[in-house]
Image (cartoon, rainbow, N blue to C red; front, side):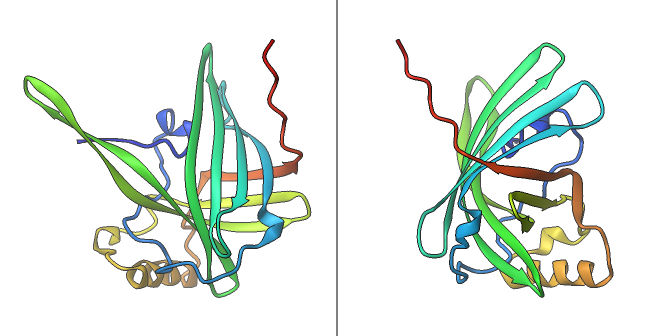
Length: 195
């Protein structure tokens, strides 16, 4: 079985990945939408080699407590350009004073079959990122896939939250530095009109 993860274009070039869960940190949205998060956020990612990526997040209000998130990305490695657009929903929850975005998306599961077309199905997944906004900068730190050795046993939001709380109380770094990004709020670029 092969998972095609399209959260970030970096995934094809890096060994670490964000933590992918079948459950969010909180069972559902309860915090109202923070209007200061609404807008177009732009960032550039560089890993120290000849790889860099351009990321933009278009965050809009879907409901009183849910965000619609469109992630536009373009990764460049040498002469290869990989455009990528992904659509998510998200909602805020807290652990202590730390604000987290519970990001819901889907992955495509491809199961090869002998002498037949591969079986394909979408599966709902959640990603969790700590958020911090200061002025026109949004910092996002994504929980890494290796944050907990017991992650296979996380079947409920309470299970996941308990493991995250334990790791944070032990002052463990549960965030993936390669998936920790900063964005600047800019006016949304207008689409070019065709001739």
